Image (cartoon, rainbow, N blue to C red; front, top):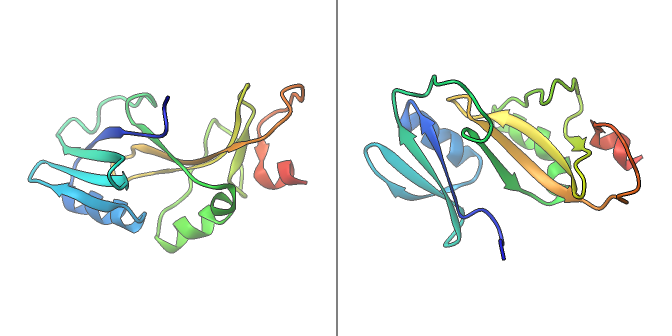
Length: 149
């Protein structure tokens, strides 16, 4: 069935700024045009389309302006530093104040650990990894470090 993300599209205001940003995340340009650029997320399998528009300031809704990139747990543990080295700030998610992102989301039947940040046009981006958690355990959102303890 579903094996991963095939494509996602986001509105952007400045193509050059967005190309620089997504390149710093390690994504490779698949197609570059005047008003749209596609990046490979997984070469030959999934991509991200960035569309220049004057409608970037439309009201935010996560289903329209959010992308989650699957990463392994070991990489997620290093994600805050990895983003910092690329001059990308981590953001608060779900009004959960955390200085030590990533956070663990108690979503059943599958819980996840995630870290959130924005692109230059305030599109919401997420690095996420599934976690193996006993479904019988009920818990609140917490920092990943607390979950590991």
